[in-house]
Image 1 (tube, rainbow, N blue to C red):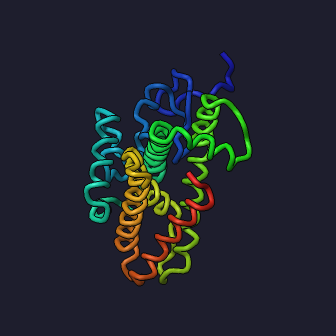
Image 2 (cartoon, rainbow, N blue to C red; image 1 turned 90 degrees about the vertical axis):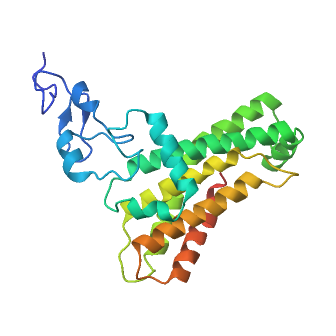
Length: 248
């Protein structure tokens, strides 16, 4: 066996398959089973550096589906009080993965409703994009576009909010915390599952309101010395700006 092949820090008899995202130590398949959703981390770093505030953050959750559903229910039930038990120093990766799941599934369902309830809308879309293709191929194009745009939208939203927060109050903006705020707030994109009513995008409107309520609640919780009016405007600008720039 090649002596240069990395071996696990904890189990040197096993080859490494990943590295801890915190301390960069090599991990074997036994250690990797202890990862946090969206974040590979060793037991030592998990114990000392990671604070679990939601079921989705908790690496000991027996079911990823139940952890996801419980966290989503909590953020939708009380988008402002949700943040009162969420630590500010935890890693942002689980929250961002959570957001991607909600943005992708919600956006795809939104377009599915449009294609079902408004069949002629495909012609309108194609004219707006100045392209012509069969309907089935165009549907595939739309869904592929969603997959490509969703992570860009999430990053734009995060960095835009982080930039806007730099001018609010005396407290320094924390990019990791901003990522968690945006990540869990974007769970509201699941409301895109609500079908349009009489041409009115009920799901989109509800999602916009819930994302705003969640981000505003988080900002007032983590930035208590800043003006609530400025925090409200900051949240609105971040949501509206990222939507305009990426059009998810």
